[in-house]
Length: 482
Image (cartoon, rainbow, N blue to C red; front, top):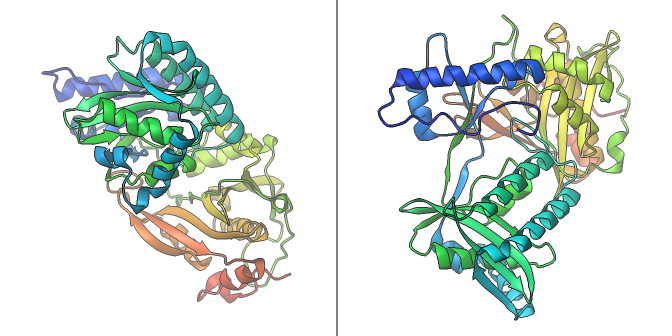
């Protein structure tokens, strides 16, 4: 799948008349094939089946059980829109889209759209290369904000392969397409297909980055010309990419279609508390992020005086893999390649905790740059089970919050399992508040909490806001002092 792992992009699809026993045998055989490959090339725990719909999940749940069980984790769902909204772009919510389309029409009176034909393919392939090169430049080092935490460059590579193949075989696949020209230059193309009598699917849409408004124009024209008889259009998921999520949400979807990743549930060591805690910060980390301020020990702080918090380096990867495997289920733990990519990514703050001359914990934080401010999301915080209970996790959390204050982060977000009482308590003591409950966020029946911490607009404001809750850090109100 582009990352050295063997996975399935779709579940086994039962033929008519197939029973639950046949589906179970197919699933067991699929995991056996993936396990054999991943055991040799990657990690057996990376075997998984992706893009499982609600309907297939019900059939699979009925077919599994006993000594063969699977857990389901939610993926980013498909965005579904009323056709009329995409065609007309009416209303205040879509005002900016409407204006971008109108501006394109005014600035390029020689534009035209044509239904896709064989003669258009060379121009489409050339635009696909331009799209990928531009996206690789603009989003260098970007990672997805889902459980897989993949490099978006890998996803774009897959997208290009799939898009090129779809263009080459669009007639055989019975796809419809539209191309957009400005003069003699092809500046956009799109492909789609019907999903049901009520819904069409837009599979690909690529436009030239030098022509603002071209995306809005070709999208509305394609839906009007080719899918006018369908009440809804499906624009697929967002890959877990914040910028793509923002774009798709900006068109005001009426609903999302759920999809899941299936894996075998892992077992964290017997009697060990769950150590996972999610953090994320995406965007550009400011120049101050690399400096690690010293943190002196205080009376009442249980963290070891000999604990050192520092920037992670590549040589830490092997130790971090061991920590991940001891704290997370195999399907959730970061692998060596993912950890290495996180450490090398200049947009990610990876910090490790050292004690007794060894790495005993780490945190992963992304900072996202908005137009007028920065926000953070804590993605990962894990401590070696043999070092838990010594305040190291709390010290790591405090440290990354201090760094975010130093670079002007205004709000910090995270997600945590509702049943992870230790993590919920830790975050509460650090000043986080629950803002909403996330039903089935970690799988069917496993709910999550979205939490937020406001750091204020300056470092001084943050110092007074961070740790003022009752009992926070054993009553200390000067956790950032000195």
